[in-house]
Amino acid sequence: MIQLVITSPADYERGLKRLTLLALPLSLLVSAEPESRPGDWRLDLLKEEGLEVTEAALKRSLAEFESPPEGLEEAYQSLGVDEFKQREEAQAKLLRGGRKTLDWLNDIEPSPDPEVRLRVAEIRKQLNSPQSSGRENAIRHAVRSLLSPKHKNAPDTGGMIHEWFSQNAKTLEGNYRHFTFQSTSGRGAQVGSGILVMPGKDGNDGDQQLVLAAKGWPGQKDFGKSFRVSAKTGGKPGGVGAWHLGISIGNVRALYHPDLAGGGFRFEEHDKRPYLTQNENMGFTPSSDTMQWMSVDVHRLANDKVKLEVTVEQGESGPGRFQRSLIVDAKAIGDLTRISLDRSGRTGGAAIFDDLTVDLRTP
Image (cartoon, helix red, strand yellow):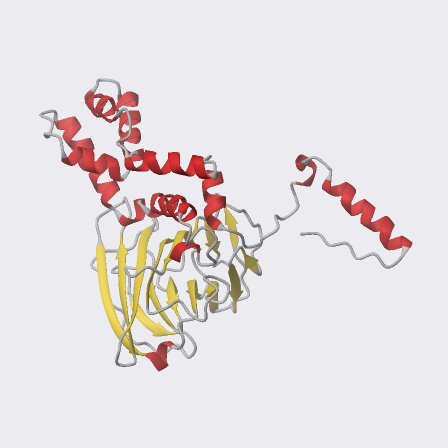
């Protein structure tokens, strides 16, 4: 937002020039950074999906979510045709059906065609992966919560926030919608092509964090007794073992090393960095060829403890699933007032993030 403070005729002239710039075609202002400000992420997401947000349109969208998608049978039959391009298009259409495709596939007999069975197996694999459902779940939540009288205008947007990094920022140095970027490494961050990038080529040993504070969203003193933080995470090649990435909850973070054999997963405290667990083999190597899906379930226990349950799942390049839990003193993790996406360590590959979701509904 541009504010004009007029205290003299000269200020008035300068103000007119600024307003004139606003009227210029967008093509002449491509070098300007977009204004970063918080809003209702649900409206932004539905707009990007091309969905109207009137009550009637939202009800139509909800009805479409709950009814079987058209053309599944036709797409299924095309999985075994001779033309490769047609088979690929049919598989893509079935994937777009999401949960409804899975339910439909569960109700039909397996095909005798090995090509069809192979493609159905791949469709099931992708649709059953938690990382494939993040945006779809966010869209469904956006529609349902906007139709709910209780959640329509709620500051906590019905208990979920989803960030898909569609608003580009060449240099991320401060606020990004509801989030704040912080760095002790001397390196900034960028958002482009739908991902958050925390580079590692220059700067000092230190941290880069995209932080969500509870006072900003959901507008409460903390995130509550039970919640889930999930995101797609990954790293670009370089500096294997010298840096790591992950998710922080309060003063405790869960980290792994991209491209390092076994991943070297650990929990540590953020402020003084004592290890809470030693580096651990994850049973697979988090590859820089793909992204991993990472989630942290947080539960405040009755005995002044907090339980963290972490899942890291390999992307499409290979199998791999790692799960670990840790119970820490509430004093060690601190007040549950902030979460963040983290890159930490010396120079090396860039950390990349996408589809960050914080869900306050008990997982």
